[in-house]
Every structure is written in structure tokens, then in C-alpha cells.
Image (tube, rainbow, N blue to C red):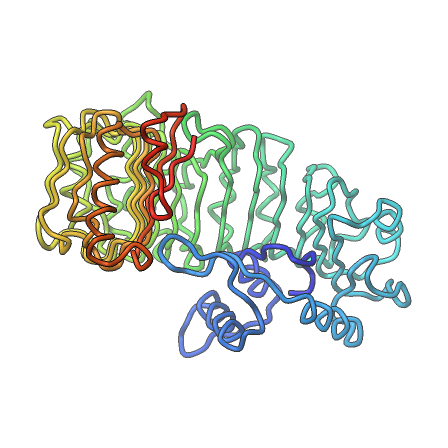
Length: 470
């Protein structure tokens, strides 16, 4: 934890992947390594050794922070135990024998140049520096976190022991076919990918892979996605360890694929509007899938034929969701669904009516650019018994939001972004009704209205529980 800058936000998912890749953790009673790591983090938080900085929309820990005194203790213990070396903050004595090297963003260029010549035995190399030249010795590396990744300098043939590759920018379009030489690789993360990259077919033989995450710059055009080739037909390698596959295009969820990735938990797909994409027709067969994101899909042709697995906790459907009545019928009965984001759908009847028993676990609901939605009817707070956050964006035709939403005891926030004036005023009435019942100072939720242009009438409605910004 001391390898992060002072007062920086520490991403929980990154810490867990680092721990797993370093080999610090062992399975306990059949639990996954990621689950074991999460329990250790929970224990650190419970003891107030690590502070939760930000929760996700469903209440999960997203970012952590450390007190400066504890960070200083980590740095001192790390130097004493020779556990890792932070360039510029630890003594340079004996640096050549260091196994883990950390370069913070604030490190001077001169010290960065020096460290490249002084760490021939490094097993882990974690750099947040803008542009750092590659280390001359790569064969021993298990962990590589760097800004830029250039194939001729970081070739797979030079990194046979690599377990985690976390890079900020990928500067070439074609991953080398020798990528399968990284037979130990578990985690492959690209945070900023300017163009679509083509993965070699050899990726389907990398049985140790646990997480593949490509950050897509533009979901609408799929810019930066990883283009997956068709798996080889002559053999099926069961990728039992693969849990995350995000930011990929040309995924085909046929029967062979279902057998190939039986334990997938997070799936993020980029589709194509040019074809009727059959990527997720068998998605219900992935019985352990918890998170599904589908962007740039042409849903209108086959949304009625799709069945989602009951294991889903998070679902994002973006770009032409198709007939929203069909989509809502599919997702409202998912028993574990906590987070739902829908965009660019079409309410062909002009209305949405919920009934008892729907959305039993939903905590976060986001609707954006849903056309022709005029009337939303929710006759009881029991229709969304667990709802905590509601985000409505660009619903220009929505006349009002149901007043019953204000009666949901778990509700914490409502955000209206560029919605109709009548919808904003209905939200204000909802707030006023609940202020009368709960008291202005004890209202359990806040409403935030975001306007594209300043509207004096709507700005005049603002109070501590009803914020208006433009």
C-alpha cells in the first residue's frame, strides 16, 4: 500500500490484482484468490488501518486511502525488510539487489534514469512516471506496470515469467502472435488504447489468464476495443481461471465459447450496428456471470430472444437498446440485479409501468436517451424495495417522475440531467412532500438537477435537498 503517492486514491480492483499476481495469497476453503484478497481488505478497513475513500453505486468499496502516518510506516518497514524500493524515498544502498521497484509520478527524471541501470534482479516494476524507458532485464519480471508499451522493447519473448501487465497506452495495433509465450500471464490491462487492436488466435491458449481489461475510449464507435479472433476449431483449451473479459469486439457466445470460459464473471462487449450481432444469444448459459456490459449493439432485431443469466448483478445496455418494453420485461425479474444502466432505447407505447415483485435487489438505476418515454407509473415504493440511486439523463419527453419514489426508505440520491422542465418540477414536489413527512433536515435523499443552460425559474426552486446547477 505504501507504493502509492501520498494522499492518492487507491483502486481496490488494482490492489487485488497486484496481490494475486505477486503470489501473496493462497486459496482458502475453495474461495477464489480475489475473494480472499477482498476479505483481507475488509479486515484492514475494519481495523481502520485503511480508509474507504469512495463506494461504488451498489455499496462496494471502490477506492481506498491511507493516513500519511501509516504510509510512512509502510515505507520504513519495506526498506527495513527490503520488501520494495521506492525510488527517491528509499536509500539507494543495495538497490541493485532489489526485487520490487516503484517509480512514483513525482520522481525526477534523473533518478528514473539511474534506477534503470541499478536493478538487474527486479521481479516487479511499478511505474507511474510519464515516459520511462524499459528495463534492460525483463526475464525475471512478474509484475510490469508502465505508461507506454512498445513491442520491440517489451516483447513477450523477453518476459516469460510475467504475471501482470498493466499499461497506460498501447502504441501498436497488432498484438504479437508470440503473446502465448507469456504462459504465466494472469492479468492484462490497457487503460488507454487509441485504436482497435487485433488479438492473435494464440490468446485462446493462455490458460492462466484471469483478467483481460481494455479501456475503450469511445463506446459508440468501439475505438480502442480489442478485436478477438475466432477460437481455433481443432482444440478447446478450457480457460477455467478467466474471470474478466472487458473491452472486446467480435465475441461469439456459441456453445463452444460457453465451454471454453465456464467461470467468467465480468464481460464487457463492443458490438456492431452494421449486422444483427449474435454475440450473446447463449449468454444465459454463463451461469457465473455477474456483470455484463454491451455497447454499440443493434438490439432491435433480437431483444425478444435473449435471456439473461439469473446470476447477473450488474447490467449495462448501451446504444439502440431496441423496444424498451421487451428489455424491461427481461431484466425486471433478475433476482440479484443491483445495477442497471440502459440507454438509447425506445418506449414504443410511451409509458412504463412497474408492478410488485419487479427489481427485487436493484440499488442503482440509470436511464439515458430513452425515446418517447412520457409516462412512468410506479404505484408503490415496494416496486423498487432496495433502490438507492436514480439517474435520469436526456429524457426530454418525460412528464414527471413518480412521487412514490420518494417513499422508498433506501433512496439516497436522484439526479436529473437535461430532463424536461415538468419532470424537474415533479421532483421538487416529491422533495417537498417528503420534507413535510420527514422534516427538511432529516430527509434521507437529495435531488440534483443539472441543466445545459441556466433556467431562472428552476434555479429558484433550489434548497439544501434540491440542488440545481448549470
